[in-house]
Length: 71
Image (cartoon, rainbow, N blue to C red):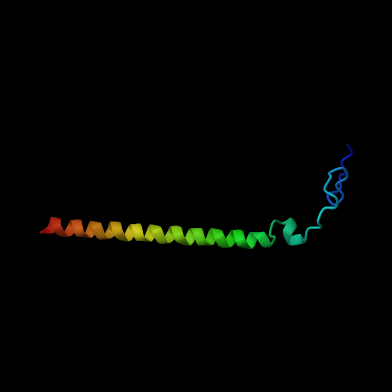
């Protein structure tokens, strides 16, 4: 089987012509990346929110324990 060295002409690959990629897509900045970045931002925001809630709960429990120790 002959393989072509040109990325836009995959001889013998069975897939026909390859889609010409835009410059942004070649740099892995295609339209799918925006969705990936949005999902990552959502996950990070959720994680930060959970960590803050835990910190507040621990802080509240610590203050409650200090109050009983002082009296």
